[in-house]
Length: 286
Image (cartoon, rainbow, N blue to C red):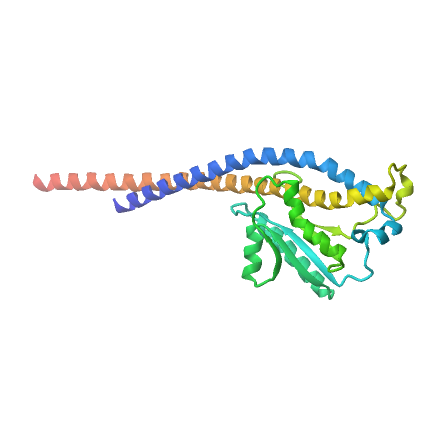
């Protein structure tokens, strides 16, 4: 009966695993609802800021505000990568890391020096393993990032751009389209791009002046763009985790069906053998 006992132990192990993955799926579903609400709340403000800042951009303002400068040649670029602190989310983290690695290779191929800033344990662990130097390593961003988290991450990078230490800043994160669609994307955070070739402050009636408005909006725009990316990343992580855990739960159910059939066949064979031995023993006594 050793074979049947071994199958029974495997059935118990798979049942325990299925219970864990099912619980994680339910937790991810609950978190996904809250995270999705935060995404929908953050997007309109972020889009409005981008529209206003892009529309107010002009060469006059770019000379006054270092954060609006547009270098003729990009010598050094900063890459801000957002990943998760936890795994068990399918290919979520791997896709983001691959996207950032491709961007690093693309910029290096153009002769541009790069510096890497990473928020998330999974991204940090990967680039540490590869021996890649990181100027920023943040592991304290939770499932519900705040505007203060965004400022603490992007503030030093924004200052480096304003000081001329870097000529471009790229943000690599997930775009949350739905729980099933969260592709990685690269967004050029700095320099700020005009809305179109003809956009200028003349397109608005400004009160107070465009100068004063930009002075207040520029830091908020950069900060809020990163905050929105963090919120979308958090929602994308929960969506990916829910999908991965549902797949694991379904696979565990399929395995349980197979193991149960295997156990029943082994048990039936054992009973048949025992009956045959009893009948054979009785026959030998006659």
